[in-house]
View 1 (cartoon, rainbow, N blue to C red):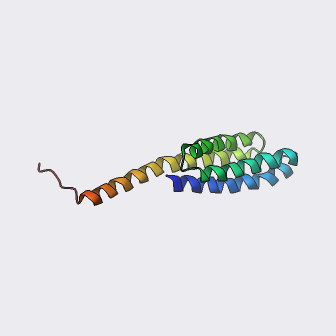
View 2: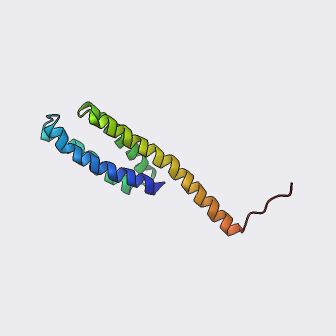
View 3: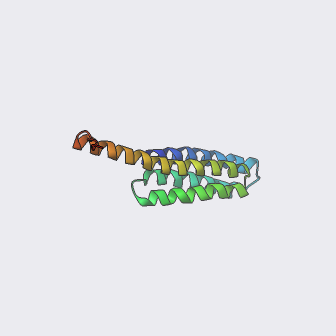
Length: 120
């Protein structure tokens, strides 16, 4: 789960950083607001990816998803990008848990030997 979530946060950090010039040039947001906001969220995404070994990283990840959608009020295309990355985030969590469970089951069956079927 952690690897999928870190990939999502890494790409999201890149998109958030690239949203800075869009906010400045297209949305006419002051650089003194756009730079700390977008680059701050990008740095927070990188920090969250590094903290995914703890629950704090996942909480920060959720906060970043909400903030990315919230940037849509400033740059409307961020509604779509924020929702896309929010969907990727949910999929990373759900599919990551399934993968972790499958790996654990495979490891347990490898340790205990082949599973024997019960007679019917």
